[in-house]
Image (cartoon, rainbow, N blue to C red; front, side, top):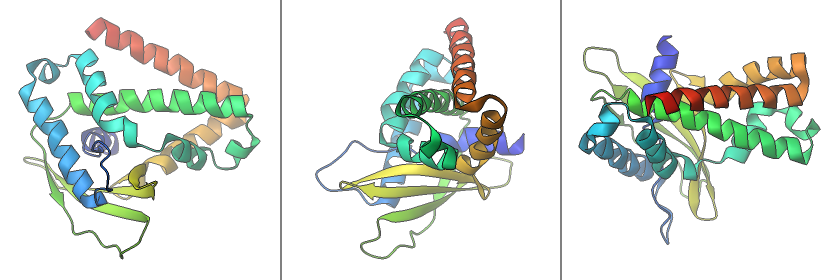
Length: 208
């Protein structure tokens, strides 16, 4: 449960800024956009009170547009990605993205005055794949290390993994999804995600 809570707290902190003519350095990107999200939460009483419609909208606007969901899907599925049909790949990316919308929205709803310590970026000039290291400072609790892995694509940095206390998001899902595919095939996994997303949307509607 500690890892899950840490992930929910930290997930909201990895967002991306609107694209500029020149790519914003990845560490500056993390700091700039995390500040924007936290400021938006502090200013909106509805979000603070758990308004899921507003929380989902903030997630969609600030967090998800600059994640590389196809690369995340390829990594999460491993060899099963190449075995899947084009239609299955498209369906999986769509449902996986929806699942993460709900996960990140839950993170926003749980924000309670955490702050972020940004570590110096250790990357050489010209690197196109980097890790931005941070720590979540929790009042009355231990700091939680959070690493963000990004790739530069077409002069824009895209996130494709998040690691909480050394545990990779995509690796964590990879084992879970592999088991689902073993028991029900690719179509079974997709249907399981569809059902889970419908359930989550139903819960959100009741709260909204």
